[in-house]
View 1: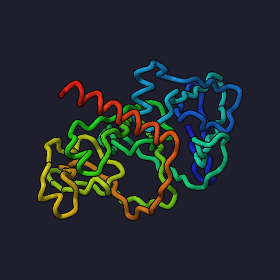
View 2: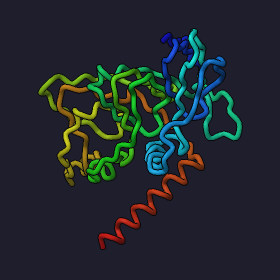
View 3: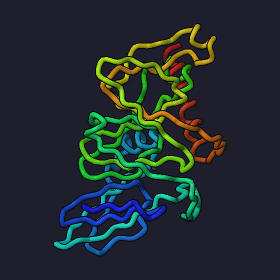
View 4: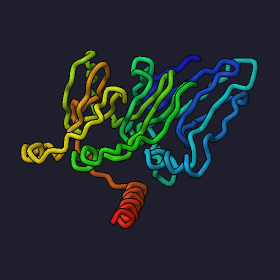
Length: 250
């Protein structure tokens, strides 16, 4: 498999016979005739989980070279998925990560997944530690990307990330607002709910990590106040789910 990220807004992929590549819905620009593409994991519950993780409700798309020769696939990542018609937005950039170096499991912000090689799975990550996710100004639902391949994740083009390796045995505490992604096994599951934490302006809780692991934090975080229809709908659904849970408990 040959993957070229040099062209702005485009990923060029050359697939050998029987090779497979995955991408989010609507990402294909064109492909050769020997490539068969189809949605995967179309069951309702999997679609709902994927939607909660920030992806399309419908599916991730599987591209497979079914021919006996090299076949070319072109994906565009500079695209506004919420627009009526696809057009270049020049707001997106792509970084790629080897999941083996990420200890096999990466938790990222909702909607970050763009594409992946074979051997990578995408699921929703639900942080049951509400004190950390809600009162720490984080997010309850994130994306869980796991496996042994290479994943391509998207971010704002003007957003700079800092890769922070954590040595084995070392413990660090990070403000949830500063985190873009982290290796799952490094997150300490204890609840750091603390009113004194709130009094110093860090919310009621923080994220604590213990190495070995990797955390991606923001070098800069430009203001981007853009509320889409899909984002509003997601918040309404989450509010309703929370209301139902409270009714059941109370």
